[in-house]
Image 1 (cartoon, rainbow, N blue to C red):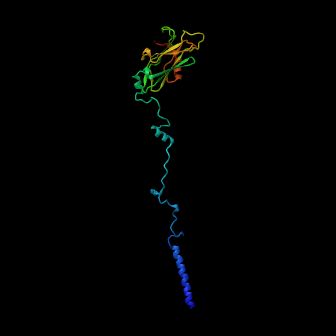
Image 2: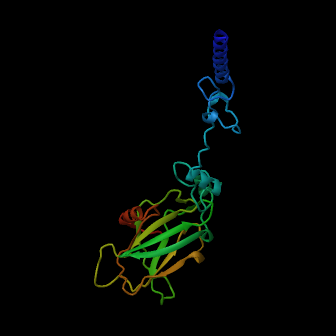
Length: 247
């Protein structure tokens, strides 16, 4: 009887051990022998990317690209396309040589700077045009109905050539020095106004514009320079005036 009881106890222990072993090998466990933890893998609703790499986020547009898209213009070296009338198909030197400037396409301003009178001529259209090498300027008395006593300034000698090309939207300058010697104690004539014809060989006298000189202006041996692209160059040209202007 004791032997049979021992066999039954041994069988019970063996059966328990086998049950524990089967439990350890079954599915759903979290031991090293079980399936891998999916918490570190891709989400179930995230599509796989070819090659195993995640898609990169789209880079935001730069400020320049956004601005260009909004304005419809391209940018080159950080500079915008020039505004205004520039860039027309007729804005070329060749076109200007065949098309003298008309007063209707120009704006004119005369401003004082000491003894200088700076003549500014701007092309307000999209087409280039041609000015004479210098304007026609004379100084007179507004109370004198005739101009026989008007003063004509000296101009640079050897004036000639095709003239001054005025591109669309640009300005040409001519400088008149009404008293280059800075003389005090009187003037050659009692003058108080200046007459300006911007392109005398191409414009009628009716296009002459009159500007007041002011009561304090003293006029003596005035000099007029050629049209230039800057005030400095126009002033330098006026200093070279040594020849009576043609009338």
